[in-house]
Amino acid sequence: MNADSRISPSIRADYLFMIEQAVRAPSGHNTQPWTFRLFPDHIDILPDFSRALPVVDPDHRELFVSLGCAAENLCIAAAHKGWLGKVSTAIDGIIHVELSRQDGIEAPHFEQIARRQTNRRCYNGSMIPDNTLALLKNIPIEPGIGIHLYQKGTQAFDDIAALVYEGNERQMGDPAFKAELRQWMRYNRKHQDETADGLSYAVFGAPNLPRFMAEFIIAHSLDAARQNRTDRRNIASASHFALFTTHDNRREQWVALGRTLQRFLLASTAAGIAHAYANQPNENPELAERMAQTLGITEEYPTILIRLGYAKASAYALRRSIKDLIVDEG
Image 1 (cartoon, one colour):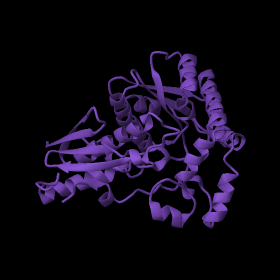
Image 2 (spheres, helix red, strand yellow):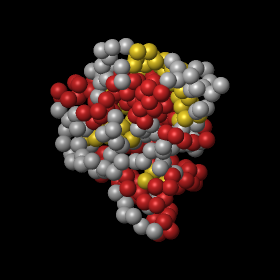
Image 3 (cartoon, one colour):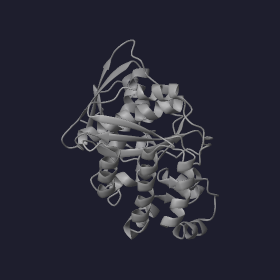
Image 4 (cartoon, helix red, strand yellow):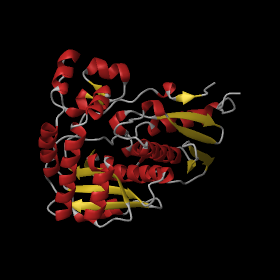
């Protein structure tokens, strides 16, 4: 018997709706490293290691953070449909979302799931006011997860920026890193539409050029000096860095961090705040340790770093059809 063969049509429709929202979660290089399995009383989110990033994410930490983001979206969408979702992570990495009917469940920021985007643009330089920061700090935080905000103009902000630039030097000096990055680049509209994944030319504000031209330009643009010029401009335009940490650097906490991160991103979106990843220091163990020491958080593991600010909306990255993501479907 297939996993979802006993599910009624009405429940199955709700479950598909939940998955449609789950896949709007962010993921490294927009790899979308997930599949889903449906049961009458739960949905499993399975890691798709064929979409892993072995160079930049060798222990799959960022992959499981992405799965946590997807699980949070799924739970919010479930609440919108009158279901309570309870999340647990199995030893094999499968995320189990138990679902039960319940009236009166809040679905915080459900409408922001479709609006949230990673905005890689240069921001407008405006600072986030204190009352808005207070709202972001007030989101529910999973056990073992830390959120630290660092304002532009402080020494901590400048220290983090310096580590981002050093991270660029290391990554852009690594041929394997650049080869992996190019593998997930989508060079024009045709290429983007064929795959519905990866880093689309559009999210970087690039023109829709013939692929051979775009590949040539990108190949000659992936160097530390160019990346640091871009990042210096982008970081100078931001208001804050937000650093997300775990206490134990375990798989269950990576998923929990993803859930917390997604709540933060949806709350930020609701407040009109843009975000983009600046995770280079966290992707190098030596730089991550140095950052923890510099910031005085040596009992925590820096995991996700984003910049925050205000910007015009950017292009949205595509998502694969959920019909290709559901396994054991009858």
